[in-house]
Each structure stands twice: as C-alpha cells, then as structure tokens.
Image (cartoon, rainbow, N blue to C red; front, top):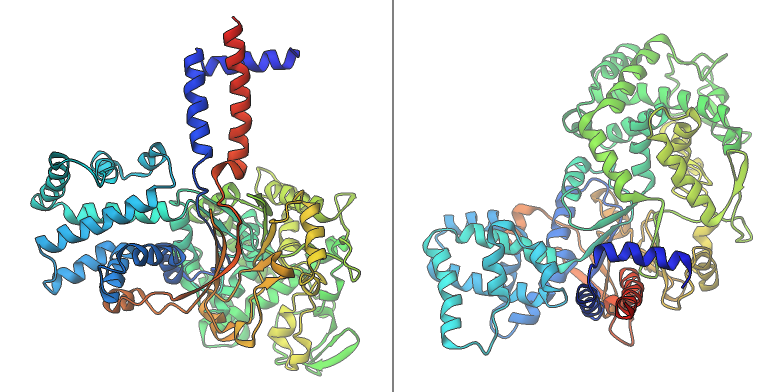
Length: 623
C-alpha cells in the first residue's frame, strides 16, 4: 500500500477504533446517501424589503401551502387551509388575534396540534431521524420526536399514549408555545438550504432586520451583490462607498437604517448642507452636499487607478458653472442645477476643509459601528463572489466579456484575469480589504466592484452623475456589458459553465442583478433553460417596472421550479385576511429520476468516505 494511504488509514483509525465502528458508519452513510435530496431555495435582490422577505421565508416560497393542500384538500375547506398556513407563518400573532375573537378553545388546540404534527411528519420523511432531532426545538425535542414517529397501525395503548401527550399539553396551558415550536420546525424542514443571490441592502429601509433574520438561519450561502459589496466597502473604510451608501439611503428616504439601525449620525452632513447649499429641507440639503463629496472622492480614486479604465466618469472637471452645463463625451448639455458652492473648478476633486471633516466623522462611524460590523462579518463568513453547488453555478452579476463574447481581461495587481480567475481574484481582494491593516489598493477595489463597468458584480457604466445632474434623459442610459445580450445563447452559457468546471447536461447558471420585466413579456428563463434570472423586482420600488414582486427558484429531489410572486401587502393583512404572496409555479426541469443525497456534492463526498471506510475495514480484517 502507498505510504500516504497507510498514513491516512492510521488517521482514520483514530475516529473508528474497531471494525464494528467502521461498519456502523458505513451503514449510516449509505442510508443517508439514499434519502431524497433536500430542498434548495434561491432568492435574489431583496433590497431591504423586510416584511416581504419575512413572509417569503415563512411561507417557504409557497412550499408550506403546497404541503397543506396536499394533505388536507379533502378534509379542510380552502379558508381553513389558508388559516392553518397563516398560523404557521405567524403563530404567536395569529393565536393572539384568534384568542381576542374567542375562536380558541380545547377542541381548536386538539385539532390544530394534530394538523401540525401531520404536516411536520410529512416534511420530515426525507431526512434522517438524527437530522430531524437536531432541528427540533430543545424544550420539546423528546415530545415532538415521539409524535413524529407515531405509526398508523399502532395498537390502542400507543394511540392512547400519543393522544394523552397532546391533551396534557393543552391541560397545562402550554399549547401556544408548543404550536410556536411546531411551526418553527415545519418551516425549518420545508427548506434544507437557502441560496441568497445578492443584494440584501439599499432601496428598502430594513436591510438590518433582514440581516438579523439571516444570521439565525440554519443553512445558507450568499453570493455577494453589488449593493452588498458597497456596504462592505464602506465598512472597510472606502470613502467613495460610504458616500454612495449615504446617497442611496437619502434618495430612497431610508435615513432610519443609518441613524437608528446602525448609529451613523447624519447631523453634521445635514447642518453643513443646509448652511452651504441654502436648502431648508434637511434631507435634501444632505443629499445635495453628499453628491458633490461623492463625485470628488470617486474622482480621486479613479485618478489613482487608471487600470480601472473609468476616466469617462471624471465629470466635475467638465462643468461650466457660469453656463450651467457639463460636457460629456464631447457633447455639452444642460445641468439641472449650477449650485456647486464647494467646487473649485481649478482643482475639482479637492475636498474643502468642512467636507473633509464630515468624511472623517462618517468614516469613523462606518468602520467602528458594532452592529454594522457584525452584519458585514456575516456577509464575509457566508458570502463569496460565486458558488458552485449541486451542479449549479450561482452568481449575482455577470461574467464580463467583450463584443465577440470572449472573456474580457482585467489588469489587477500586475496580472491579467478573466472568467473564473477574475472572480477568484476579486473574492481574494474583497476579503483582503476587510483584514487588519489592508492596503489602500484593496480598499479602493471595493468601489470598483460596486460600480466598475468590467466588475463581475456590476457590468454596466453607472451614470449616477448624469441621473443626479443632467436634465436630458438620453444621457442616463447605462451601457451594459455584452454578457447581458449574449446570455440568451445556450452555447455562450455552456462556455461559462465549462469555465467553472461544470459539464453536466443539467447544470445551470442562476443569476440575479437585472430585473426581469415580466409586464413586458420578458422571460426569466434564458438559453434554453441553461440560465435563470431570478431578480423580478422583489422591492416595492421595482414592482411597477417588472409587473411582479420577484422570482424564487426551488430545486428539490424532483427537479427545478421557478416561482413568480405577487406583491406582498402587509403582515397585518395576512393576519386578518389570511392573504398570502401568491406564487405561480412553473416546472422548468423535471429530472427523469428522483435525485438523492448521493447525487449532491455532499453525497459524493459521503461516497468517497464510504470507499475509504471500506478500505479501513479491509485493513482491520487483515490484522
């Protein structure tokens, strides 16, 4: 036997000290690999919409409703089924409301508990008993375990035993807590793993609450979006990112997340804006001030990095204040305002002393904020530029290409990168920016990832200046990377999949970032089913543009299903009227055979472990 194999077997023996221990583990792993694959849930571009996000997580993208209908269609009315669903989504709130109207009594508890047990039992069937036990609420683990594994053909004594458990819970007035625990378990079992394909932050105002929720989730990964990387860059100390974050939240009226959510005071900026720009409205004054500061610090950064190829964004130097115009690509056009009191036309990117003082204060707030750093650390821990998971390639933005569809080259740290290697170096530099004593180059790169035309997270020329200052909307058009016109082609998508090591005929690209305009007939399925764009306008600001309220993707043991969702009203409406996010489901790809754990990445590793354990067992038997 090869020396390395001998060494490996010796290490393996430390965990399995006898042949019987090896046999037990082989049996255990073999059994697990033959269970159905767990449900994966893909969600993108939440953009701070906490209530809608909370609801889609509670209803598991409609999976809960599907299972309730599957079990109870013949025994419960449509109203009662939806009432049960709402109870599972919001158990505490729903029971409070029902109690106030006198609808809860011992019979209601008995019926409801039985319904919840039946539903939890169905959802637990694709998991090992061990995995289900680990998911059980600690206070009720033994009781729920007993009830979940009750059999239809049990004798009278056993049936009486299980019935007595439930009756005792009711008699001891603990049924409310037990229902809350069962509801949490049902939602936990409905989705095995969550993929969040970028953009938790911006537009909506409660990204901080979403982050709190995500940090409690049992199993997930995040593919960074450009709005996530913007906040990450701000916490890394990139002043251009900081100004963009503040501008975005002022523009969308989300001051609360900055001041109340993360303790970032805008008072100095507001006071400065009102004084210097003569604007009475504090928010508008702050917005006017921060925009100028933004384009100054961005200009400084662009000048430091000619390799970014973004000189076209150096527009402050082309402003003519007297004429109230700016020259863009050789064309002079009218400005919305000529109010630039801090702009030195001879040195347009230099901050005034007051502006510099404001930036220093904001910088300290972002870099040192405890709650914000906690959330950003979570984004780093769970996130990455891309993920290859169970034969799918997942990323937020694009793989930059040139006009010919060839992977575009980007010069970074003395070398050229493209395709997968570009994603890898971007991931490396993003992590380096958050390390102790990062280089200015790595911190600057966070802004490029946010807004660079060749950035895999952006992929377009960002026209923030034009949108803020230019009246002629023809200047607002943001040219996109050729990727976005070519990803309808199957061979192009296969080229990308191969670049990331995926050659399976059932491999897909799962993409966010660009809203799908369903209202105009746009289809989220591209390239003959090789690529899915699942940004359908989850945030309210995009609902009218897209015509829907987002897409989610479900990948279970039977295949892939894409779901289009209607806008969410409110939690109050859900509680009172049992309204739900309606989800139209479309089967995109149904596997010819059911997928099992052995077909997943984890399962393949288990099969390798089984092979190693069999080698160890053979070694034991030779002794």
